[in-house]
Image (cartoon, rainbow, N blue to C red; front, side, top):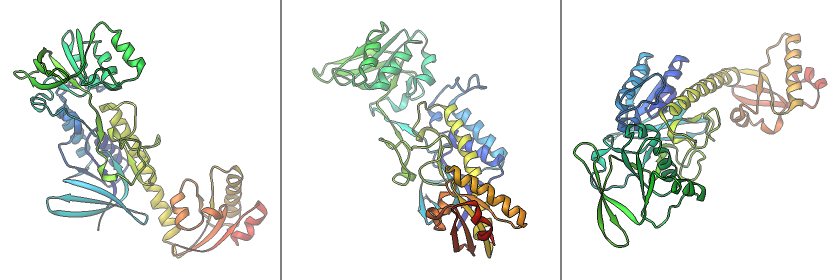
Length: 400
């Protein structure tokens, strides 16, 4: 079976950042991607809020990210789809390309698959993406200075982003299919108090028109059936966003909607699987936050991989080894670990001291979780004997 130290699924800003940091950390990195490098930024015509890049198109940023990763020798592979499985303590990434299926064993996996915006599906929408149709007010709002725009949606995102757009646009129409917004009361009150915002209730967008850029929306009142035109220079779609979490769906913990839950190290609920970028549960989804996530995930993965390789060579590969296992969240056990190190040093013997709390999977695999603090004799990867310590006076005998 093909093996890699770090497999990154997704080649958007999070995945590319992870690849760069992973390669610089000396890891063997494979990036799997099923579309153009850059992810969602490829549908953004202009980006001017990525620090250090005053102005560039989304595809240009994508190319810069890929070229940067290639500079360090990152391996890329195009696939149709992927799925991550656990087989014992091994992480297997199953990929499909055409009719062929391949399996890759990874020491660590970073899920950087991103998310996608729900589309209305109306006529003219797809043709005008990047030409007046946008899914991100923060990304594109400044391009509509002193112009009239429309927002489609009635939830918190639509109402709040509509308010944000008034910083630039001369007028913002918020189009909603119901007779009132679904957002929080405070958000609604703030929006309706803004003189630049005009709600358009009981209405859907039937068609988006424009020669090149957006020029007009064809609207339909869902109650009366009346069709009308609304001249705008842009339309922002906020009818929902969904994570592209299929490769780990049901494997890692996620919140409602599928957004993957991680800690500050980008670690998921499954040891050795990390998540970064828009697929993760987070406050802000932007190029810069995705790139930051990727950097953190790669360094956390590097630390994890090095630790696992060390544990494997220290505990599982030798014919026989005696090691001390303790929990770093128990101060009495931490004190015992220091005493064990001092005793081993005095006796001139090598006794690995393993934090069983931090390395819970390895400790569980060896069956030592409920025996800590303990000195374990391990023969060819199997615990032959484990002595639980209750005080420092027992250390010397346990190490004999």
